[in-house]
Image 1 (cartoon, rainbow, N blue to C red):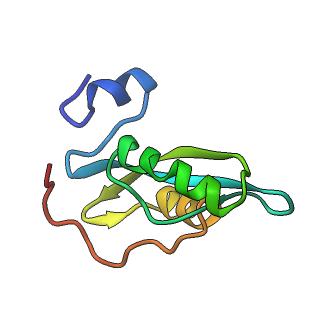
Image 2 (image 1 turned 90 degrees about the horizontal axis):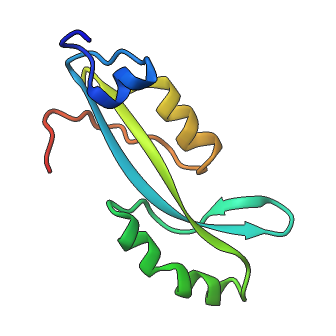
Length: 106
């Protein structure tokens, strides 16, 4: 394992540049009868925050199935990578943020 790889991604065989930032966000998703799974609301910083909205979304959508879905976003050199942009666009129907990440805040 070289310095450019994290332990988790080394196990997966994916090299990560030293200047890459990986973050996870969670969405509440509702199963629409005609459109399939669709995002209901914003991105949340923790699974618990997203899970708190499940009863509200289920009530607003009159009992349809609701789940919490995780999305892993990766920034390289401060810019969101293409795979993350495509995932946000196709799976979550959401535009990628325009601003670059300059530092990692925990």
